[in-house]
Amino acid sequence: VSLGSTAGSMGRLEGKVIVLTAAAQGIGRASALAFAREGAKVIATDINESKLQDLEEYPGIQTRVLDVTKKKQIDQFANEVERVDVLFNVAGFVHHGTILDCEEKDWDFSMNLNVHSMYLMIKAFLPKMLAQKSGNITNMSSVASSIKGVENRCVYSATKAAVIGLTKSVAADFIQQGIRCNCVCPALSSFQNRQKTGRFATAEEVALLCVFLASDE
Ligand SMILES: NC(=O)c1ccc[n+]([C@@H]2O[C@H](COP(=O)([O-])OP(=O)(O)OC[C@H]3O[C@@H](n4cnc5c(N)ncnc54)[C@H](O)[C@@H]3O)[C@@H](O)[C@H]2O)c1
Ligand SMILES: *[C@@H]1O[C@H](CO)[C@@H](O)[C@H](O)[C@H]1NC(C)=O
Ligand SMILES: *[C@@H]1O[C@H](CO)[C@@H](O)[C@H](O)[C@H]1NC(C)=O
Ligand SMILES: CC(=O)N[C@H]1CO[C@H](CO)[C@@H](O)[C@@H]1O
Image 1 (cartoon, rainbow, N blue to C red):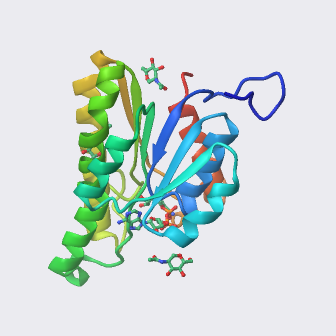
Image 2: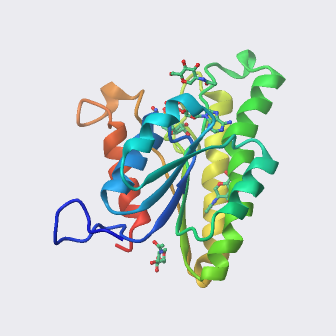
Image 3: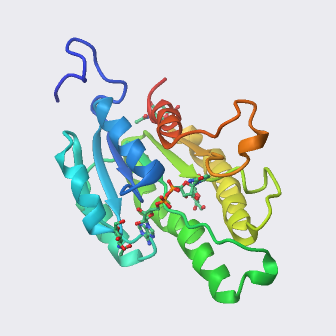
């Protein structure tokens, strides 16, 4: 294991193996880079192979194509990974519209990609963490959830509220066994005029919060 980016100072995630989903762009990509900068060994996954490619050039990051809605792919991937310290579930899709705009196929697609995928990932990776007696899981939720009622985010908010409920449930069930669970609820693309800062958070700022959650701090 090499030293962190600054010679002589250890990274905050030195020696940790971090698996993350939806790493090809946005918050996932910013987090992969931030984790690697802190010395983690990052396994960056995404459904989009071509977009994932250029992460390969960064030291500490390896990539793997993974569709988080496919149980077979997830289980096979989990079998390949020897150790995992941190699982970061980022994959999610934003459906725009009210309940009247949300057809059953839209509802099912979002529930499947935003919620069921996390269920599958946790089920596959939690047993490894339990065997190690340590590990941390971060799920990606949103302010558009049970936190705020947001216009035109009907099924999206329902999925992100589910992520919060399940995160708290898993946190309660496994904290005694050394597993810490959190979710992050960013507001990146809306609420701009309501933010006291007068602007919204950047993907890089969210990534720094996720570095903290993945660390021993
Ligand atoms: N951007 C925002 O304003 C914001 C705000 C709050 C929460 N979030 C949440 O943060 C997460 C990331 O959002 P973002 O806007 O940075 O991402 P994004 O929409 O820019 O990227 C999504 C990524 O997910 C990948 N993906 C899609 N389907 C997949 C599948 N089946 N399997 C694996 N990967 C798949 C895509 O290839 C893409 O790389 C999401 O869960 C989102 O709901 C985003
Ligand atoms: C992958 O990302 C590229 C670049 O953004 C995009 O053109 C392409 O449609 C994406 N492919 C899939 C399968 O999402
Ligand atoms: C994350 O959320 C998913 C469902 O959204 C849930 O299955 C999983 O247990 C949660 N993980 C943690 C660590 O809370
Ligand atoms: C790998 C890792 O970060 N493990 C941490 C997970 O959370 C527990 C409980 O807070 C810490 O003790 C571990 O160090």
